[in-house]
Length: 194
Image 1 (cartoon, rainbow, N blue to C red):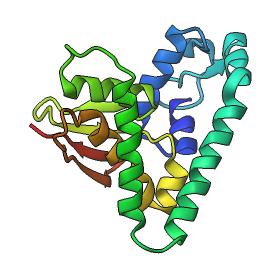
Image 2: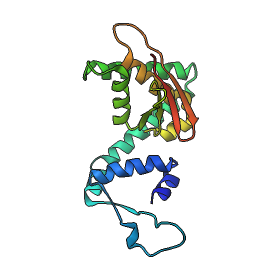
Image 3: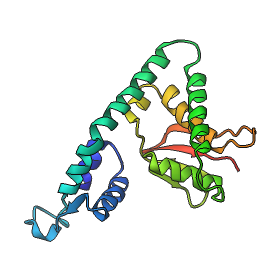
Image 4: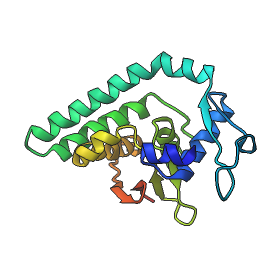
């Protein structure tokens, strides 16, 4: 159920519901008609979700590799945090280099920078949500490196901040963004420049 997944993953039910909808649309998950379940108490019966055969195949095709890269990133964060010096500054430099490399590989140059960043963050698994009343403010509702970010936000979050700065930096003009880790319930807050 949405509630069960939200409790297990530590996310907000609305975020889980959004992602489940996308998985159902892609045929990776199926939902069970709640009216087919016997009534169990007051209120409407909860919808149950199950992974489809296509979902199982998708999980098997790359899940182990992704898990290993997440573990590798966590090991780097652990090492950088323990190394001494200024791990946040080092992490920011690494993130900027990463973002610059992504920007150099191309993409649509006629797309506004904020839209480019939000699209990249969506592809990387951050579930970004620009606020309607303040479009420069983007809520990052998920984190692909959440465990490492909880252990070492001074490292992981600085890499992510640097990533955005690296993508936005052009023509030798440095751009700075603000990233407030775990600033709101279920979200980090990214403030893009004007």
